[in-house]
Amino acid sequence: MFPLLYDNAQNSTNAFDYNGYGFITECTEFKVTEERNGAYTFQAKIKGTDRLIDKIKNGAYIKAKANSHDNPQLFYIEKIEVDKYGDMTISGSHISRLFFQNGTVPMYYNYSEVDSPSAIMSNLQYEVWYSDAPYSWFNFSSNIRVKKEFSLGFNSAETFENILLNEENGLTAVFKAELLCDNFNINLLLNRGTDTHRIAFGSNISEFKQVNSINEYYTHIMPYAECETTDGKKVTVTATEPYLTNLNATLKKTYLYDCSSKITRTKVDPQTGYNFNEVRTMLEDAVKEYLQDAEQIAEYVNITVTLESELEALKNCSLCDKVTIVHKDGSEIESKIAKTVYDSISEKYTEIGIGEVNLKMSDFLKIKRRFRR
Image (cartoon, rainbow, N blue to C red; front, side):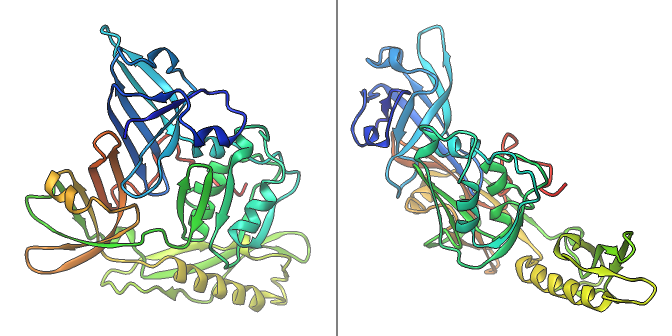
């Protein structure tokens, strides 16, 4: 489909139910890149002779198909380049990026909540930096009912990008969840992929890497926590011995697991041993939770599919769908689709990434600091 263009000054979401300025009929390419829990961007090429060329401005909204299965999605223009012939190359982000730029007002205490994602976000959305349009148009929902601990730092203001997507302490990491953005609906799902596919390893795969590295995995885990003593000092309490992980390897490697944040309101006495066993019970529970959430595997795959015939076979795929890679020797590895590049004009995928290829967020999204201070 050709993309639809809208003015940047919209007072409600109802305007996007109509055609706005109309179709950009001389758009020759409109590629949408979507990464698993990461970037959701577009780049388009438009002839300078298009009738709407003068209305294409930074901040304007643009609607186009982003993949083979969702309804057309809204984006906003962030960058415009014009060549000597008057032809344009424009790029920008999915409308959901406006939601992620928003955030909580400064908190004058350590925010900590043991609850589901919907309840946590409901609390944090009560007051935000920007409450006018378009920031007020978004809805957050989640099908995850389990409750887990989530914390923010002392006297801190965080964007929803950090709260949701921080690689270590964001809601996607805490709940092992998948993010799905559908126009103004932000969804945090237990599972996102709905289909399964098979692909044979061979000349039809442009890039392939399979990794088996013991450096990234641990055979043992030793929990510890810094606790307050009864006389107001600090002392580190550890388990009496390391716990085994689910990885059996010849070379042993121990992960030192800091559980200080999980030990609350418990004071110990190093002289008498008071409350040490209680803390060690909490450390054991923390290890059990960690091992349940952090399953280790010995190998993973990186595959980028660009061949047209193979892309055609995957034409109905979506992010997080499972893909079984069949090797020449008959062995199989199962992985997930982590990236798609879709051309809305031809309504075809031009690239599909499978495996770990793009699981980390793009550099401009990556937040290196931790929530806890």
